Length: 246
Image (cartoon, rainbow, N blue to C red):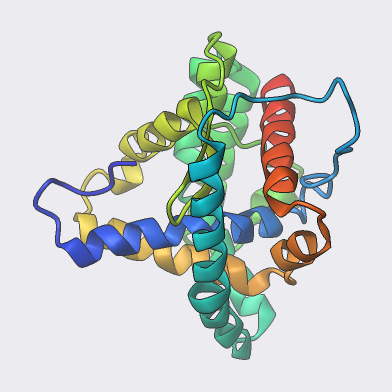
């Protein structure tokens, strides 16, 4: 994912990679709206699958990501829990609101005009009445969030996953969704006038706030799975399949 120029400071490159491991935290926060994020049956023969020709390398990366998550990212997030939960939820609302323009653009690219209007409405209402997105009056008005991203758009255009990838410091992805993640950042008008370091900082703070709201979801699934690598690969594929067909 390209969030920085070729001349970006090496530390900035590291930090922007670190933040993406926190995807499990964003998923946990999103569970308030989608409790089925990790619900799937590992025994289903007809469950969605993905090619994994790099499984050996992916498993090594998966193990390194787990150590970094447990040793660095989650301890920082737990430290943030000294801040009252309502304040942290307001912060999470703010960072979530920043993604609404990208969601609207992708809905438009999918020719989903109703959802385009929904996401634009949420952004305008929450940015104005919701005080830059710290509050979520759009949901109170019955305008529910329905996130779309470039990976979903490419899927609806007929692009398959390609093959499974576990990206360093990010986690499970695919060739299609990895490219889509880079496109999502480039599409976001909120970031167009921001310096790379500002974008990195926004992503880091947003990820850590989301993780602070997580109740150790990742750890509970990891520790209970017979093979955590297979579990999270299956969860990733089935979640993405559901998000494309909805």
